[in-house]
Image (cartoon, rainbow, N blue to C red; front, side):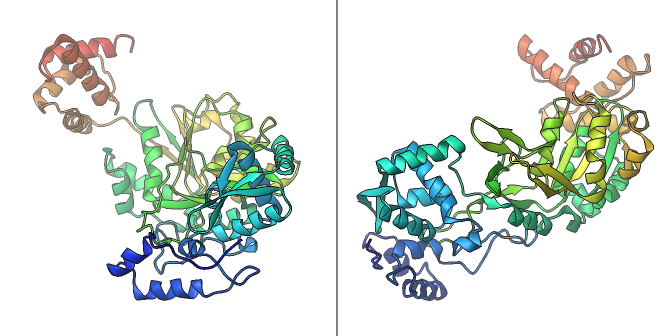
Length: 483
């Protein structure tokens, strides 16, 4: 395979240099990489260089608590073996049919040079062959009959052929580097996190120390007062971004960690496309600090590594997916598993800050338990759990009903959100007619719910978008018919 450093005339490098878009430092780095010997013939392609030249700036380092996964320069740095990469390549080509070396490198999320070396060995062993040439000294690969047979054997054991898994110990170190214990939110941080909610100053004073503890808390009170909304916004008071691996490997077990349903990806901004501006290990994903909410559907198996025998792939439990963030047990006490089962399962992790999980091959591993666990419930904590567990949850915060003043303020806020003209006299009239006579308690959710009913009433009847005495009466008759 010809690895001579040729840069085609159509490359973006030439116009970029001509327009002065590349700094002198990066030009020096590029030339140094071009002249640095690697591989058996002591040369490397321009494509390899453009992929691997590191930038001096590493955006996102501050947001991720100082942790930044840099692209590996060798298999040892990646923490994987040639055998694992071979397995992923064979399964990918078996499914894809044919692909260029660069496509394969993008699929397994490793630098071109590392994948190219494995491809060269597989070609020498006649596991695959080149069927055409791609751009910039790249080649299109296809499995031979020997390779297809090998790929089928690999697929029978495990069907996974995505990003190369990150070794478990590298994941553990990343959690330690991004731990919420190093985050100490201030009053200003909490005010920013709750900027879209109306929070009583006394409630904020209680929440601050609980959030700083990074351990756990009970949020309890009547339904509709915003316990879940508060819990979901706590994470925003911590540092904004963290890095997690797409998948983890424990021996030969592959555990999927990144979950698009629970994790919000926050990729670094794309650079010019000429040089790899961030030099990031693409096996890792930059996400917003996770907030994972589980409710009545929670069962014991959600707290363990779940192995799929059909695919040979395991799924990480919810506490692993929420590491470095917040785990909300919503409507605590009404899960499909009993309260005692959940408490017995977590009584040690909540105190020791680590958990033990079993992999599919029977190996037990110690996993970080590094998240703020919030138990949100409509019931009194003392009626749910015993003193031993309450001691391990040091903060018990009641979310009370809003005062009349705050209740009116919520109507004002929601009127703006739903684009209603603010008419305080109608709200006062509503309170005197539908709350005071029957001693009905205020709830934080009611202004939103009643104004939504007014909006729908106006839309259905073709009326102007405005609050009236009639529309408020209609909304209250509907809303409080069985309450």
